[in-house]
Image (cartoon, rainbow, N blue to C red; front, side, top):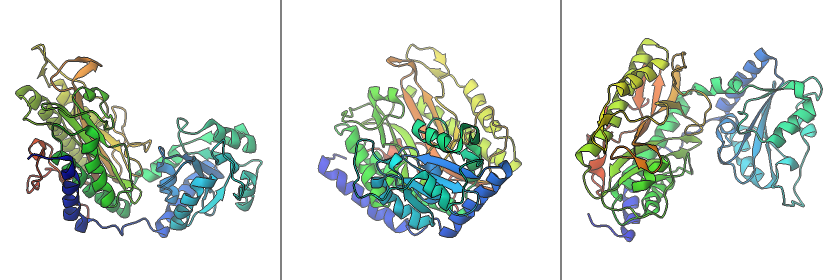
Amino acid sequence: MNLEVKDLGKIAGEIVEETLPSIDKSIQISRKEYEQRWRKVQDSMALKGYDLLYVCGSELDRSDAAWLTGAFDPMIERYSVILPIEGKPVILAGSEGGHVLEEAAERSGADIALLREFQISDEEYRWAKFVSLNQVLSRMSIPKHGSKVAIASSAEILPYAQLSMLESHFGKENVFFDPEVLRLIKYEKSDTELAIMQEANKIADAALRGMLAVTMPGFTELQVASVGDFIMKALGAGRTGFCTIVTSGERGYTVIGPATNKLIRKGEIVSLGVSPTFNGYHGVIRRTVRAGEEPSLEQKEFIKAVEDLYVTVMEAVKKASAEDLPSNYIDQQGKKFLEGLKLKTQSGKFCTPHEPYTFIHNMGCSECQEGYGAVTPYTENPLGKQVALAIDVALLGFEERGKPIFPVLYAVVEDAFWKKGSQVGVYNKIPLNVQHLVGNTEPIGDDINPYYREFK
């Protein structure tokens, strides 16, 4: 199929028309569910003796505030949410972003207050109705002296200015970092959360299908990404969990690099990835292909090894779920597979490529920044009872940038899956190997992911 730039929009539009009837845009978290969340967290706070819970957020770190108050569309400034031991939370925002976050407050039933401390530092807002933290806390009946504050955001993302604000108000001895007081609760998902993520992954599948159709020599990475971005927004995904990934040729060294103006050349290996955000929750899918021609035998073997690793890990997930095994059993099975894997290097030797990260991570109001739930060699608890996770398996064809070892620099298969009790199903229908979908718009038909299972 010979394509020109003018064809990109046509292909994206056709996929949107085909997919749109299957997307249920009405599924959202209700006020009742937000209220239930607050009560669960408040019960956890009471057990630990906390009077106030504090989380912060930005356009990068949205998960905690999004889960608590529906604040999944922040703009411009950093912001935070405070939850008292009794009553509803308050979103603390700057003047500009506060207008946007008022929508979230209306959605969840939270309150909102504008603090000067959260404004853009060198701006002036003459007519903004700022209040002080002390005024907000007084309305909540949270005393300044003796109250204990749990910071549920990680220390890596909390601005020093916000920490200083809390410590100066309550005293250093009364401010504690305790992310798990929130993370352990939001790790377990409701039926509605899992249903929303199903819609997000329908969008992810459609976006990737469109990108595969135009992954051809002569287009830039950004032109390929534009098709996926159009499809995601046209189907109802307002944000993305990461910048749309298109890495071709030498850009495989970036592993998760965003698309650029680099031209895709015939024969280059290309990794593609999207993570649409739908009604606050994320979908994800990533695959690796060759542009313009079939992979060589050695390239096929490398990519097939990633697909086999995926099967190994998903079989381990199913077994661990059915038998309530420690979650590190999954990691062990993946590592065992890699121990027996030997692939041909460019020098003719045989050795094992490295995996770049863990095989399973948590997802929800972020693509991978939930702060809890990744499966590692050290996670001895079983998987949660009702959770949404990502299987993210990949192999590196290098150990040092600029020095390739294998004929593929990076290959990946990433999908989202749900677990409810002992049942497990991958959300994504796109097959593991997608080389046959490159450069055409043929429907995937019956050739779907063997672990696909609709969440009902």
